[in-house]
Length: 309
Ligand code: ATP
Image 1 (tube, rainbow, N blue to C red):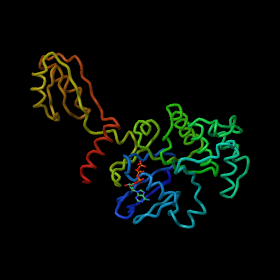
Image 2 (spheres, rainbow, N blue to C red):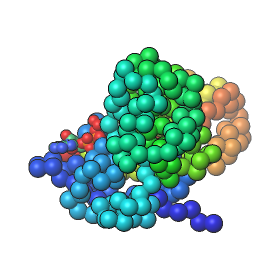
Image 3 (cartoon, protein in one colour):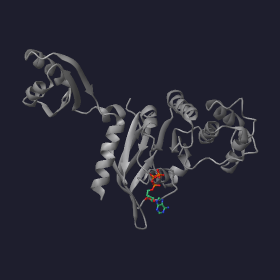
Image 4 (cartoon, helix red, strand yellow):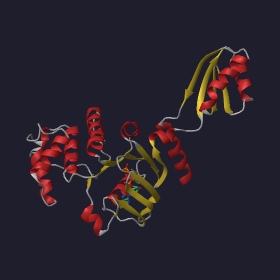
């Protein structure tokens, strides 16, 4: 069965006065993905999220969520979307459960079983009657997620869900989001500027810089680059570099002290080894280095910022 497109934008742009916050962003998120919108401060992440939840109107382009155009009456009627766009605000002197009940009442009420279910999913059943003042930041964030989960959403939209969390809180939220996608079939669209977090949490990533989407795809796809960097240690680095400079498919050969560095296709590594042995060079170490998401991010954001100026 083909996966369903849950979020889709085409040429989405947003201008606030003189500030062009989004420039022609087209992206697609499929059912079951945990999609991370990654970008530096001011890149346009919150603006995109606010458009998706209907809080901001785009200047140009269109956005669809769960098959309905954002802003249309059908989207308002049918949108089973849970969202946390700002830090959830709770009454600290009331219990977690009472807070959920009050928030649900504001949007038309809900069945007590829905509250039981949401509390159970986020692991707060046992602490539900405690005052929110006694909750840790991670627990408050989970209570926020419980609120977003009350309508049993198909799609969860979260603006910076990791912000303000300590490492333990991060792990709690990460585990919960994985569980939601796996067990409840929820699709997650979140924004973050924490690369490490996105790398561990998300199945798919979009990188946004100065309002432009500069890359999107699965984490594996984005990192499957055709070229790798290779570091070699041999008994004769000078000759190694000389031989490899003339070798087809090898470029950027550098010889620094005992180490030779170069760029080549992943499939060339074994042949380089054979070629050196054939030239009576003993290879003691051969270390391929693939680009990490962090390096990709820095490369893309660095280039785009320069290009945008
Ligand atoms: P951060 O990670 O810092 O939250 P962001 O990637 O979420 O940043 P946005 O908040 O979407 O970025 O902002 C994109 C640009 O639009 C920024 O230059 C910001 O100053 C500007 N901006 C956002 N909201 C408004 C607004 N209501 N009025 C004017 N400018 C705005």
